[in-house]
Length: 134
Image 1 (cartoon, one colour):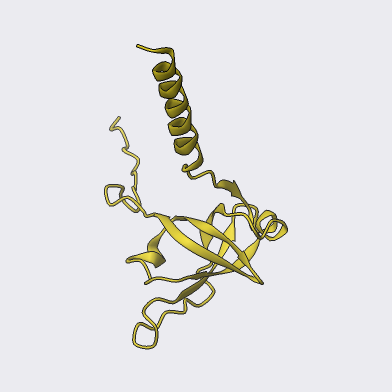
Image 2: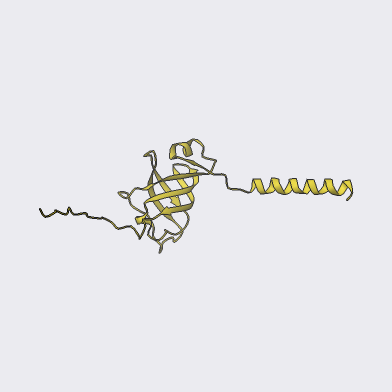
């Protein structure tokens, strides 16, 4: 092979590596206060659904608008707006991870990940004491 072909292959390999490295999803985990301090960057916020607050979803009015309130792991409360339909069994989720960024006073989620309770775990296991006969 000529030196010019080897140099061209090395340059192409470096260019492909740079393109692949820049296309990855590099969002970080944060809480809502950190997301407010950096509104231009996308973050993942892990937390829990605020079950005492209402869920706003009316598929007849707008099937692609879902609003809810959640607590992050540090206890900060934030309204979250998701431009999509409400996920099935959303109310039963044990934990949520929302991906997105702050827009004004609301967190705009581009994706919602849910950890739902396992269907293989019993709700409650009762153990009874067995008395030995003397």
